[in-house]
Amino acid sequence: MIKEFVKNRINPVLRRFGGAIVPAHEETSLQPALGRIKSRGLNVETVIDVGASDGRWSEVVMNYYPQAKYFLVEAQDVHLEKLRSFKEKNKNVDFVLAAAGAEAGEVYFDASDPFGGVASDDPIEGAQKVIRVPVTTIDEEVKKRDLAPPCLIKLDTHGFELPILCGAESTLSEASVVIIEVYNFVIANGAIRFHEMISFMEERGFRVAGMCDPIFRRLDGVLWQLDLVFIRKDRPEFSNNSF
Image (cartoon, rainbow, N blue to C red):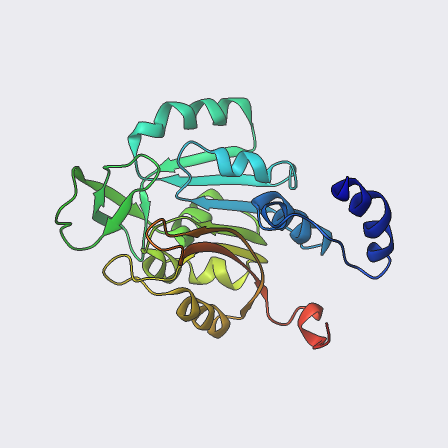
């Protein structure tokens, strides 16, 4: 009853002033975040999905940017068949089976969890399954494949973000949106916390415009991770300091 009253009576009034009342889980999920990106008129010619697993994240983004090209980077070969199938179904999709990093070579990779892999330049202790995987860079792949800017770059890489971003300097300079899974704890050697990532990205011309998919630690309910949406800091949204 209350939900219908809010939907039919309250929200139509609030929307006249640019607001609305929505359930918290709806406001902070991926789809509304993508909707807000799209509503700002941000151009995206190429989506670069790093830590793509089986392509499910890119598949969601296609509902908002169907005309873009999609390039997926995934290190674990357990997803190979689904990535091939995803590419066959979508002519605007390509992928590489490798980790992304600062330079070409190889890294250690914790492959214990098909959806939670962790790359590391150093040997990984305590993992159930550690493999060596090839490394490529975003800049090299963009150049080799002639992927057009501006790009939307997404990182779901569990603490290996800095090497990846260091290997994407040229692409980052022409990106319109960057979505990074960030953490409230130091989850791996060389990893940084979310406030440090905000500073890192601001130095490279980006500010936070949104967030989605927060996860709270089972142990005590403390914030564990979330996805931050970065757009260029010279965008007009940041020229207005009022609510």
